[in-house]
Amino acid sequence: MTLTVITSIASLLIGFFASRFFYLYKNYQNGKVDGAFEKEKELFYNYNKESIKSKLENRELELQFLKGKEEGQKEERKKIEIQIIPRIYVEDGIFSKTLFTGYDIQVKYDTLPIGGTQYYPENTIEKFKDENFKYVADLLQKTVIDVAEKFINKGFSVDALKAPKVATA
Image 1: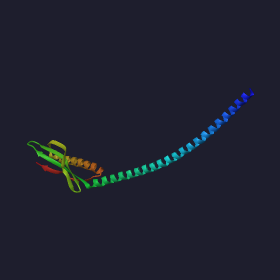
Image 2 (image 1 turned 60 degrees about the horizontal axis):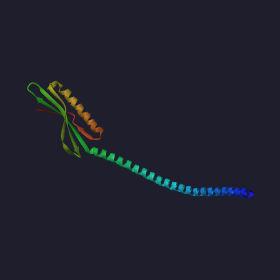
Image 3 (image 1 turned 45 degrees about the horizontal axis):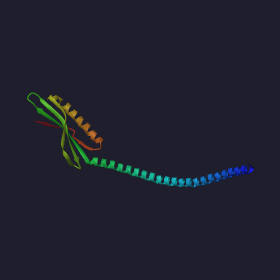
Image 4 (image 1 turned 90 degrees about the vertical axis):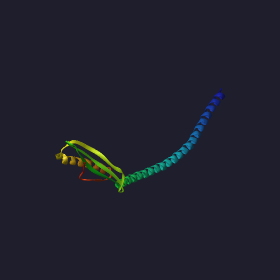
């Protein structure tokens, strides 16, 4: 019986030491593998760092391109000239006069006209009296100035005539 007890204790001790040895060996191998993962992480980090740098450089180049594009648009808009001409047309009838007001817009690029002159009607006043002509002319001039300011705010060069041209039929 003592022999069986001694063998079982010996087997228990041998199993304990063997498991401890294998446990330490496995941790040693895991340490090597983890070290390899650390190297891979470092390589991945360095690669991503370079990638992030290149992305930042690309973003800077993109911003420079957009800035140049905006400056180019501003420069080209300076070459576009918009001419606004107020027009007043008085039509004499048998018993009354009819007044038509509006303005012409002519677009030019480097002094070359683009398309034709476009007429934009503003008001039509039937049974018009001559006493109200100055009021209507001032109202039309105010409208032309408002339109010119909108074009100027967008960066265009605008030439607006001060006094409306009067055509009588």
